Image: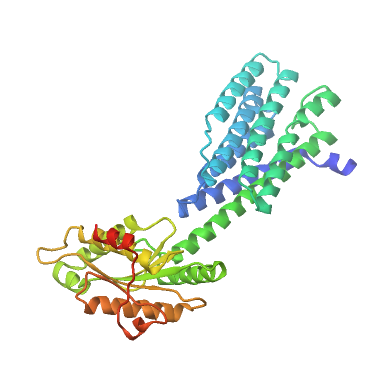
Length: 407
């Protein structure tokens, strides 16, 4: 105990200033480099506000109480509301921040009133303790609400809950010393209070940093599987998705169909209208396909002008209905030139039980080849284990589905 009491409180506050400033810089840099990182900007502002607050606390006794007590605690409360804002942004939470800011404004007004009236003892300490407890507690509840089965987030929520309870240390000071904590004074509880505050600041900043890093890794992985021109999955991404769907279909005994889609005469479009027009046509086709896809379908660019569309839990007959609608949607697009029109050819197939991706894709490619040989702007199906493997087309639709295709 004597060792802890001998630690200089000013030194601890100096460490906390450096710590919060480093976190502010780190989060600002992350936000500037990766603008799509949710919550990084708000948390950077939170740590910057905490830095200014700690500087004012360190200067207690050397500057007026209006700054060292009033402004310092208002900034610190604002820092936690900003941190709460960052947490809401990170989790894409629909909850409003208005009430937290309303609490901040009301508390700040009371703090400044009590400081200016030279009554910054018991009442002031109770107000600060309760407001910090409420804001930190709300942050803990929000993190816990999104933790589900993630142990790390549960630990983070527990940490914030402990920090909320720690805010009540001012009440303990009042009961023992009959005065609130003062950074200019040295005693055991004062030192422990600041030491815990530094520790909590480090752990909370580190926890949110780890959350952002996890999110960043997910975003980088998603970008590595995304085609920059079309915005859909690239070949690597769609092949991984196909492997996943094949395994899922095998486990659940579900149907799985795929469609290879080729833009008809795409080279002619590039040669006649230019590469810019070709890129526009490619994006328009992707948009038309996406508009007819179902929420659980996956689309990826398989080659230059070739796309792979995955239909989970779907038979080839049902996939043909969706593909026909896609084909019609593409036909309705504006043409890239006076003598050109946008159409697509589609090769469809359905996975056999236990089938690997290689032969599955090869059969879809044969179906696409048949569609091109049939004059393009059409859909063709090749089925596993039938005479369709030899190249003939075999499509058997129930009457209800046949009527749908004719509409």
